[in-house]
Length: 303
Picture 1 (cartoon, rainbow, N blue to C red):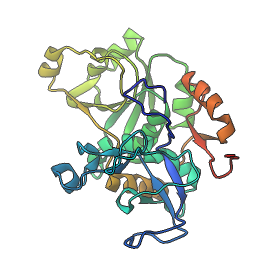
Picture 2: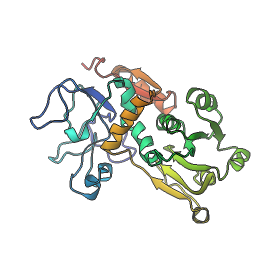
Picture 3: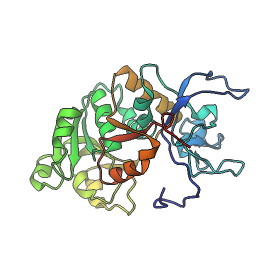
Picture 4: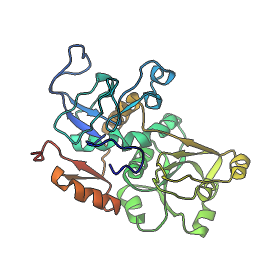
């Protein structure tokens, strides 16, 4: 919104976790009917021809079209979900399970699938993995719930002790680790199979890499505005892996919705109307939300 990540084109309508009802169909739409509850995530288009598109990983297409602040193939700017209606190609729409309310489904369309996509590879392994979730915000709290539902032993890693009670009692984490406590970090070294790093700010990687077992993986899903640093020697000697993951495919987005419904999981949200949205942004910047704002556009006065 504030032109802090990449070049923003104004006027801008944000919103890329969008749930609504189908009110009209194009002549070739076969997947949905009028009245269906559907969702739209971070992208609304891709080239449809490249290796990524043909392997159901269209989020990595070099010509992906973002839900807002993107450009359609005809040159028009894309506008997001803080609006009364959207027109979206059926390929980039997912079905909301009947068991999920719209407000519960919405955070899964970006934050949820961002946490789910890198962890999906561990499903069905039959092993109890030691998981680390670094950062307990919008993505992190969903990461805890997903990892627990997969049967993993979950450790929340945070820079302070402030969220210990929330992590252990409200989210069901198994352990809590304060990264600024050298003694705790040393005791926990070489213990984790993977770390889901959700921190969207500059932070030290080196101390967190020490927590990984041999062949352990650190998944970067939070975008730091400045370069992150690490010592290659520790990576090499411990056969440790740093990898990135960007949202998820359309297939994975449908999967996390179905997974959420099947496991009877809930997101921790606060519902607000459009007239509160600027206040919500201010609170979000102070981390004064547990853990995701959902904007009730249909129930708002948009005049």
